[in-house]
Length: 263
Image 1 (tube, rainbow, N blue to C red):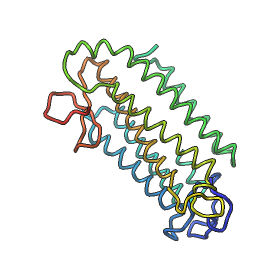
Image 2 (cartoon, rainbow, N blue to C red):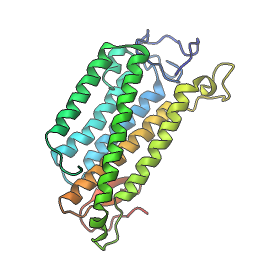
Image 3 (cartoon, rainbow, N blue to C red):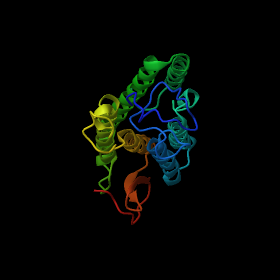
């Protein structure tokens, strides 16, 4: 997190900062109206990726609309939080196969309790509660999707057609998650050494690790959402495959096309 120095305490339009955390980016350096400029810009990438996922989804089932639009909503909340560093904006950021009613009820209860706790607490307690909730949910998702992948391997193998499968998505998701968490921890615990200001910094410029955390962590979420969508199609008896839209954005297709398959 940001050290308490004049370089990080510049006055801007939204001052004073009331959020429980101030990330390792010099505040109000680029713009008087944006507290953390690069963290705000990278949050807009989250919005764009959510909308792109919704646009590229081969079927417009409500569950997928909600999943990708939720990514966009998280991006909007992150933009407002990093742009203002205000407490109220911070609160905005905030057997396997078909499940019974217990799953959505349990998930809704978890989210409600976490939201209430984060809303009524402050400081480090609020910060670590949010991060713990986020981390636990990510681990649960990875566990469930990996388990379902193992169950579906024989089904996918029986297709006897060359295609990119869920294994590709799992590898990419785990890879970008690992890298994202690494730079997030550096930004959180070693800020004084990488912020580009102050006598302890070993760098002459700030690499904006938290902004890159936005890019790579939401890419991991995007890969995971595609993975869940892929597995849903397999359960419905369809044959999904991964391709690169415009040569760079992973997406799913349900029919044979001349689209470029990923390696």
